[in-house]
Amino acid sequence: MNICAFNAPDGSGYKWFAQKVAEVDKINPSMAAMLFAKMAKYKHFEPSAGEAAKTILKELLDGGKLSTISAETVERMLN
Image (tube, rainbow, N blue to C red; front, side, top):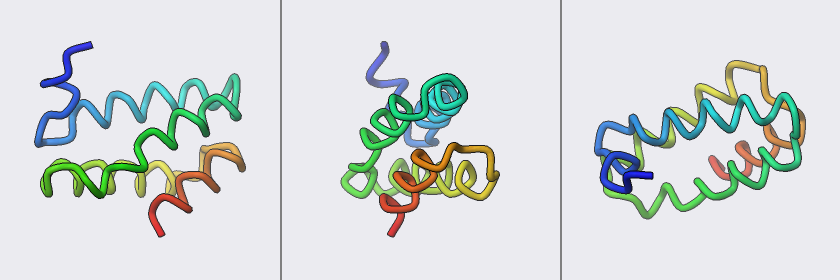
């Protein structure tokens, strides 16, 4: 993994990660919830990257396609 690309200020790396975890969520919700929890530190990212990560997480949550456990994990992170 390219750390610079993952932590891109535009949030593209976080978007890629969130999309992949959403795919995992369909197969293994518990694993996906643990992976989503790794993004909980978005509040400590550079401001632009942190806002991008927060927006991506909100979009996933608002999309209504996450499992209950993943949705609860993301909701806790955003509050």
